[in-house]
Image 1 (tube, one colour):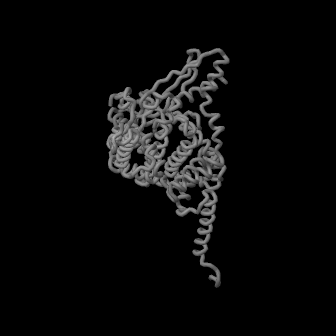
Image 2: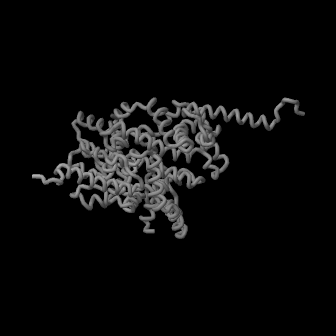
Length: 249
Length: 249
């Protein structure tokens, strides 16, 4: 029997739900710096596929993977513009390389942790640490950018990326110093050893009109390591990186 | 000696320049569907690196390569959103594959010709046909998207891509039919031959926290062809495509 003043059980259920929702909304507002409109998008952004996979493969679109695809693209555009403006005299290859240093999985995972996304991500508890140690948080960050884009538009997503990720946490100068250093490091090492370095490059057309390049580092004409990439530079970089590892430099 | 009413020579020079400028501005307005503000950006978008390379490598930022980098990213985001909304139940892999079919070099070259960009591109005449036959026009199209983005903002660039490129010229249905068909085509062929198809997959970490996958198609346990890619699906697709070519199917 209900006493006067006691809320109806159903009402309590809704209140609990609303309370949770309010807390989530507040958490999102803190992270993105503005009040979300469509909270469902943000719930989706933090739903790892392991949670919905239990419901079968047809439910997979209810995970954050699709938002991750969208957010990855939006993030790429925002960072492209940022670098384009910041380095007016640098060429395309430099910008491409630097962007990949900013939006690679490792970097995104780090950024996600810095803004506390790990506390919001919904994982299948059975997967636990294994899943979490991989790229779960970085992927959720991309999905979050996708959610902001759909919920608040490009400008808001851009502002989030620039003011909450890049400017506070990305040290572009130190990135430049580590970028493109494999090739020069290898050359310097070879010069000290009195040896020559040469790159053997081949290109092969791939599906979709893309070229795939393969670069082999030759130390005194002996092959040391090979790298592949979608540009000559990328292939050479990777080859140099692997050569340094193979040579124990 | 100047007669009365005859314009000063310098004035004539400016008038000629302004006349050219007006014609170019009009051409851009026709292509993008709105009046450009900063015409210099569009001039840059149509300046192939062969034109400025004559002036030495330091002038290379005065070619369209940087704008191409930016436009490629913006185009990627717009097409990502378009596909995200159009296919609400499809997974990330499907969207990624379909987008790459829309924004690959071949497709962009075709689109560029359809909207007449070849008449606007500035090339070193010495390079002539060789350069033009490659990806010059598709690259100029990407650069144009970058120019619109900087000149008019994301919304205008998005509108251009959707209303002037995708909707009039991209037949998404037929793209889907050719997408992801290599694997199923190969399986069907193998079934008719009473043979088995298996994929051997390996993953290798690359610089930047990215995984590079290699897939080898095994026909009755004999390797036929290998493909590489940044996802398992991509690697298998490419391997299947090459296997079909190798088997003459």
